[in-house]
Length: 239
Image (cartoon, rainbow, N blue to C red; front, top):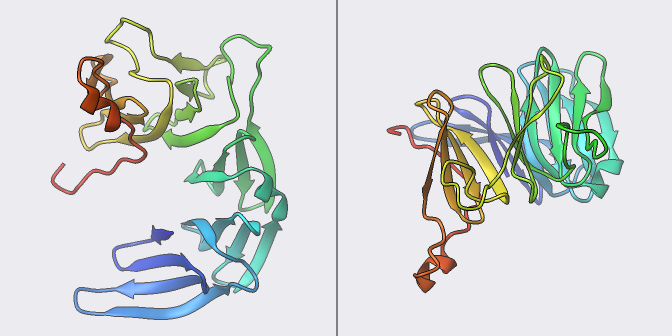
């Protein structure tokens, strides 16, 4: 896995551990191996916060929080091996959200050096969190959290509201999410939100409250059934 910290600095997870790399126009400099494999093996996710704390997840070791300034491990959370981590997301001041496949969303407070559960399923309550299997999580400019809850579409959390908002597929209604199996979320440079689903791509325009769909399944075309599952999203510099 790779995390880009700034224009030239990258953190790379490999069989040797987690290393810092400086990449310029004409050279590739491997500066050091920050966390060797004997401490933290085979990282799957890496994130570096502006406070110079590195968070990483490994299926073998769980979660580690490492202070790059003090060259010190703040937290090793081995229990995270039980629920795969899908994303580290900066949230508010000195906090990072951790979405999981099976345990909802956790929050790590960098100042207090404390991990706690933040969002989890409340199946007995209407219009609340409707699942713990979070495939992706995204925060918009209004600090609302958009979460792809496996097989249940999109759940939006706004701490200013007492309820959650759900976006789901409505059979026969093209102005809705194309599929409830959402794998990734991306806001583009125009402020529109893309969803990579198991039935093509869905584009939602918050300003117009409209939905568009591309590369989705066409039951009249057998070839379309082979190419409609999308797992990730990326926008190039030219849009």
